[in-house]
Length: 116
Image (cartoon, rainbow, N blue to C red; front, side):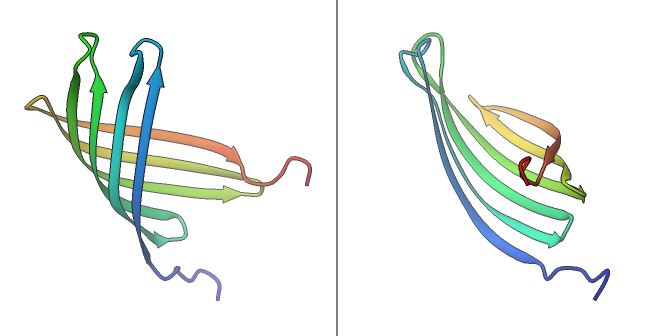
């Protein structure tokens, strides 16, 4: 049936990233992200995450960072190309300082093989 909306789906997300570099002489940052992600329509995805991270400072110590993230992603495919726009709103607490911020990403990428 044309124009029919997809059945919404819900997924859990768990992600652990560790970043190493020479400047930090080892571990530079560790990030744990836990959240829920829902595909509301074929072109709209919404999610919420809790993020805990620790980042090495020039003094050698680490500073903790905790965030609640709310994000929405819109996507549109035209032929072999997809355009994705993600908007994320963060409520961040770092060293007892409250920092709200938004992050926007616009991506355009080829979704089919170039050798196809």
